[in-house]
Length: 221
Length: 221
Image (cartoon, rainbow over all chains, first blue to last red):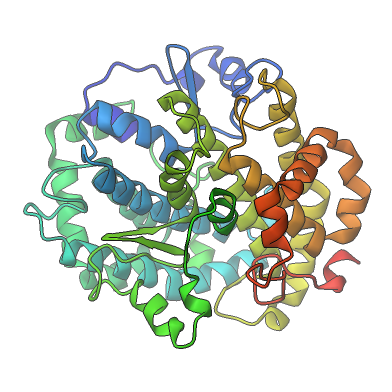
């Protein structure tokens, strides 16, 4: 979501990172304060609109900022790919919380090791192989996921690969070369002027062990 | 997705259930046969369109069949709720497969018990409480999730509650009364003529232990 806003050059405020921003963010999850409260972050507020669920936010931002196809079929296809990215992101989260989000990682470490092993051995190759296949079959020029133009799906694929590289460096070092089109796309995204500027700015939050993609070396042993 | 098609009275063919239907379904997941192949079922084929991801299929079907608001804000809100339903459905799946979809349930039963315990104690109330809050705050008449008309979100909430009742009968018997608006909505959906006819037909696949919602009594001990 931040990558889409940055690539679009849109002015936005990252509320939860502002001083006293956390209560405002939490209010957006409270059905008594907002009839259209979200179940969980992230939430985009734009005027009267309050939009939750990352894929839904991108469904809104994409056409507004030229980051999605104009025709319905193309928009659905972009949304479908984004939802598939959401699925692997979910699975990446569950590698460190396979039993409960209400327990600490330390209290489910053994199960986390088992789930992470399966994730790195079976799920990463399955998903990345799928995305490589999609890139390979896309008749459009430019090596993009959807048609012949950059879309939010490309930005999300970049974020996914970066997250996987952070959390599973060994697995990715071993696997990456199998997905040349995906890697080329990620390089292209990283080099887009607005994205490059963002990535080297303080607005970019480094991957860390409070996020979805966490580097716990014991999960790669 | 079937509930939406049934409520709409749309003609459809459930390909995977036809004789020799499975290869056709599997082909729709093959990027070498379809450039817009899906990562996983379900897939809706309509003319030249091939659409994957349940929420995305409903995003397409909803406006075509009067099962979604016409305005963008309403459509986004319906999609957001559908994605939140998808999240709890995903978590329900992981109660019987917390470690790996490549292992049998029997080989991850201990972890399944731990995850199911957390799901029933913490996650079901958290999600159903959220949906109850949304129903309570919706200013529209009729007790629907979105505005004053039936939408695919209502059908999905019904399917969710039915699935939870099947998989976690003890937890649901204990919790249900806390969500009177949600229960009333489910009763309303079940009594819609097209839905009632479908539910008592052979087209309705009973919940079973190959599906997402599985009844393993040991997970509720």
